[in-house]
Image (tube, rainbow, N blue to C red; front, side, top):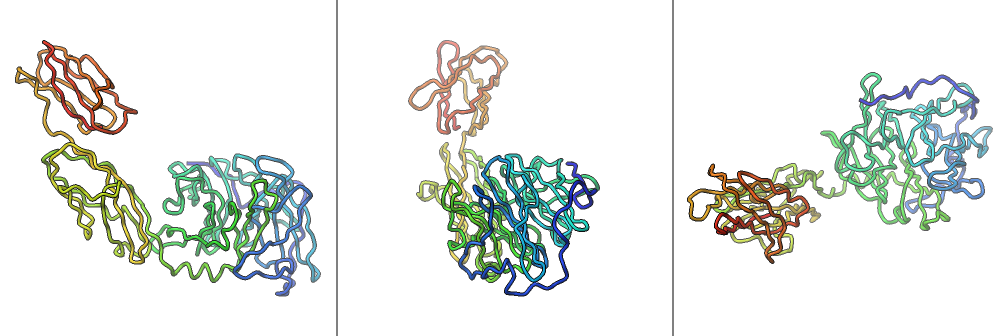
Length: 474
């Protein structure tokens, strides 16, 4: 298990910053620095930064809306000089911005506002925590030192921690994870498909009541918790929100009304800003629209032999539809778009393949699942039909064995008699090009790693120069 330093209680270190919030109620027209709230079209949320910097990454707003924290970024990556800045509402007005921490980015407040998570701007993701006490904040102390990566650490109202990290069993470079804690031991556990993917899963926001998550997958998407555990297939927030080169640093206000995020259209960040947009209606409506089905478990290679009955019922766990798996219908054809061969039947109701092949062959089959709304997802897999007989040695009545056939990486060629008479085995392609050869007495293994898939010929050259050929499928 991985070791975590305490992320809740810290000894106060160094100087203190940021006055304690007052009990005063902030007027509605003064919320969010008094900037006019947007509708469903995103607008820039104006945040001043030092010359040569730009506002970026996630922002943080206190639960009573009287503190706003953000980052002035000098450049990506890595660099020094980035600054966490803040505004505070006091005496019927906003004051600031003030510098809070130099060389840290991406602030996130806990629900109670008693702790702040942040990270340094480096190519290795490291999380830090500062604790509010009295009139200020402690210097950030690194936490989650036992994790391979610790990015965008967040804590929910239920006391659960979420993070982008590199778990022991993951899907991408970084995965969206939930932290599982057992005493002093903490492990990052990947949220799995369809939330995480084979790409880097980095910036995200989890609602403090865990009613949704906003994921930055190049575009901003929303996913919802499933009643049986796990999260739904993410839905795109649409072209109006996802208009830039990349969307990152999502944060949603405590009342779930406003989404804040960073984007721009130029690679040099010269037009990069923090935007905000009203999303409570969008998040609620997307929850009730059709979920796209997705591939959960790819179909593995299916092997059979000439003259054998082949049966393969597609497992229910292959495709998942968060609207309910009973909404899916199925179809199958070859990957080049042509129909399945005559010997191979596919039941579109039970999603089962069956038939008796008569030829050695490899089929690339494309299986498609479609939901009631017409949304579909496909996967391609192979059915490999091999030889089911031994190789008979000419003239002797003895046998040679070639297995497995079809071949997957390694081919064994052996004798069935005990004569010990050697022979030379050659593997050639259909154009006659020599691929591998060995002299065999009893048994040898051909390592065929890296050989292109296809049909090849095994030549067994025996005593007296007699030759026997056998078709092999790789």
